[in-house]
Length: 413
Image (cartoon, rainbow, N blue to C red):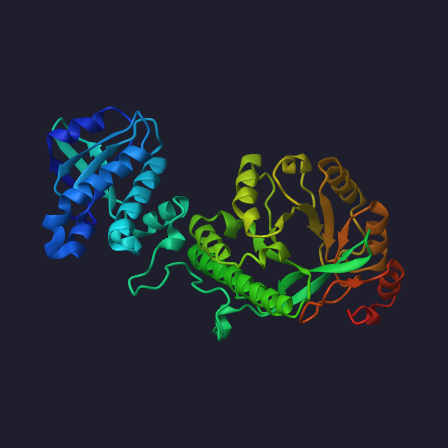
């Protein structure tokens, strides 16, 4: 049976199986039959046996399945959610196809929702491509799929390919981050200075596409930078700011996570993902999921939180490696109470604290006195076009540069 793009009703005695509660999914073998061509008749029994073996090994004791025609299997998972059931069946369909015919595309994996609309009738609703992409991400097979032309289907098939088009690599500068306790510049924050314009009259979907292009371009720039410098034996940490909205929008998150998976393992210890533009009131469970999803792609995850966040305690137990604020460009002095709360929470949770965009000597001195761990901004050092290896920067030098803004150019160290 070929799953079409419209819901269809199908008469079959097996429709009764979909009346027991819980989701029911249809797995189609039509793509395999078409690729097998004349060999289908000889291979059919072997294909059925392999699929049924996969189903028995993957399903729980409360689940069941049966064939309803030559190319369709009905699978019922009474104790699963609808999405979990679809993820499970998609993974099974992928394992079957790849074991029989090798690499496959998302279009060759055909599953559908099945609902009983009577004792002998099923309503079959296909799961279309954009939904399949989300399910493939959850099933951890997205990076294993190929496009119709045989290339990997992920958005950055080769993260460090030579001759990358200029539009693929964001134009960035790097803001030095100063470790107050160790008195060294050991990290840089990737900062875009020619960002993709976000026009107010753009639709939300257009803005979302622009945001993910920006995030992917920055990731590529950071990867290229680390690869070049590590090849020369130069070591430092790069912070990659990505907006909370980009990391939580389903399609954008899927694309960004897929690109992160392609980062070479030797680059990951030098990359920190920094969640920025964090709204007030993010649920603790959402933070735990977000940090857990991305921390394996690098050294860890830090969060730049709203300056007047009412409850910093919600960040406890989330797995963050750092927590901090970015000051407004016009800020002359520090919001002392907020900084005190930040440092107290950092000490209680055992994580590092940071302040970005420090622009005056008074703010710099206040941050040092308060005990903030990492500082960055014009009062520390101006952005540089390329990061440098870890280097010593004494407190006295930082304070002198802050007192003489014309000297705070990043060249004094």
